[in-house]
Amino acid sequence: MRTPLVAGNWKMNLQYAEAMTLVDAIVDGLPENNGAEIVLAPPTIYLHDVLDRIQRKPGIALSAQDVSAYERGAFTGEVAASMLASVGVEYVIVGHSERREYHHEDHPLLAAKVDRVLEQSLLPIFCCGEKLDDRTAGRHFELIEQQLHESLFHLSPEKVTECVIAYEPVWAIGTGVVATTGQAQEMHRFIRQLLFARYGEPIASEMRILYGGSVNATNASDLFTCPDVDGGLVGGASLKAVDFLSIIAAAGTNR
Ligand code: 13P
Image (cartoon, rainbow, N blue to C red; front, top):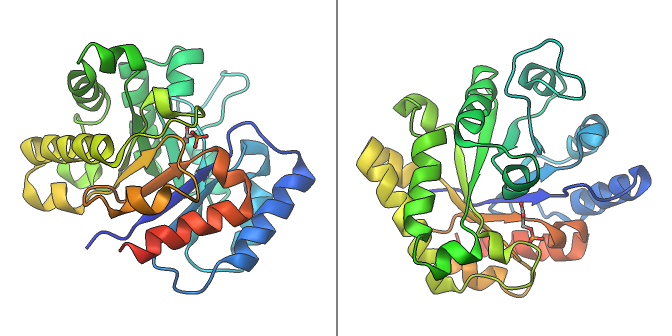
């Protein structure tokens, strides 16, 4: 049985005081035994203070939004996986479409980031997803397969089980156009079949595959009823405590 996971990716939003208010509201509003694992991914500069506040409640983990592909050294502005581990981070988002698009992150770089994360016993949330023109041209399955093969499937079975996969169709991110349950389930099933082909049944059925892209308090419940959708990676709606808490409740209910 896979425990659902709901991760809030705050991206580059919120000033310090707003961020602390949000985390307090989430911690205070979260019922005990909500049935889902919660992950918060604030901007790097807030990681330490968010950790201080989430420790009041079990079941909430901290994630970074990105990591350097290098271990240490002269890489001005970058943050190493070892540094994230040293301040209590547990998860790291790798391969978000915004990093692929605006920072030109390619498959080998993302494979290196996944390796750095795992070397520090952190858990990657590996994002994959197609653009609208890829879907229109019918290339979406092929593209997702390539993203997984090139940046994740080099891992051993022991290592890959540490990962969470997030399917985030680029056309659904921040657009209000959510994938239909049919589209989400179809792609999640495909990803699970790829895991099966590469790693076998136990691993394919154990690994969590999250959906991301315009998840909100209204559509979460339908998405989470899909058998291969194990939770969500939430952007905009994770910035409002009430909405994020409803999404968490929907994940817990559909367990
Ligand atoms: P939205 O929920 O704002 O569409 O963002 C999704 C996302 O990119 C999460 O990583």
